[in-house]
Image (cartoon, rainbow, N blue to C red):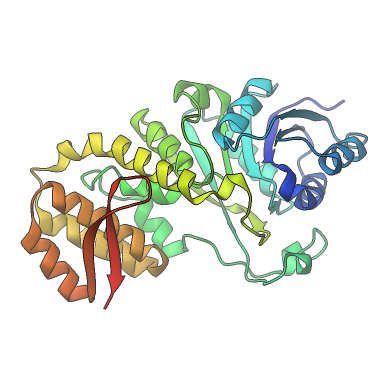
Length: 327
């Protein structure tokens, strides 16, 4: 049996069982063989169990399941506790890693414990069935942060509100970290339930631990398009997560209240120019920040320049929120 140098933690839940086979096939296709797989199922289903039993003959797999509760943070934390290796790789079960991903992750982590590595992932295909382990290297992928944005964000100024670089880096579908650093940061916050925001919270905790962030282009993976249904994608849960994250990050706002508004606005505009897909959330963050500084004139000027309008609303959970609309 090979020595275990990486623990690959895969979180899944029953509605996405059909994608798990592709994820495991991608792991079997790796150039690096010194790893174990830990599959954490948020729920129990026969299909996942059968897949685990089939592939356990070819690869060391630890399988853990519980009653469905939609706490993905809990799944990742359980996986970390079960890990035998000193270095962890986290992927969702709708990710197929390219054959060199694990080898690349390990080569970066083996000599650096205060480092978090963030792999690219994306898909230009409309149907997941078009992408397989056999043709994965032939597919052209689109990633959530392009190379120009990557270079900019890695050198992002720390004076921006709550270190926006973490917001874009900390997407937890494909990343690697030492177990020591993961535990030092306290793992994922299990208060977050359902989709989203728990990874941003975790990324910010890493930032507060002075962890290094590095984009790893060579550890890219294909993201398999899938339906978003079930408790995990419940809109009320997602709304609560957003509010919880805003409160968490809001504690950091006070550190930036004496900074020049124009400087902050300039940083936001630069980010949007690098990746227009984050325009809506970036504008929302900026307006929330300027509201705390009572800089309404700056908000009006910014909105006029970018042809947007905003208003305060009370959402379904009775939380005050900012609504952004295009003119």
